[in-house]
Image (cartoon, rainbow, N blue to C red; front, side, top):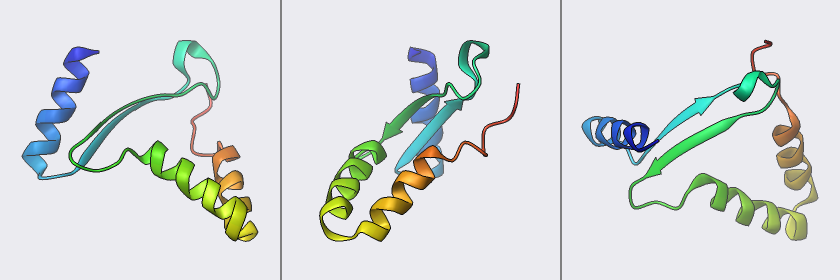
Length: 81
């Protein structure tokens, strides 16, 4: 894990990016089980932003809230094993 984080950090800095991610699909040969390792430089992590946006949308914009929920459940991006 440490080597993955070091690699992501070096790659991110080399590219001048603010974030970098490693995604493993179908972890432990389990369909739709996903693991993500992320590194962020001076920005709020995406899962925290999504949590705040979801809470806001639930209270202020049901259409956006339903779209967020729909996108979260869409696993069509994940390759079949």
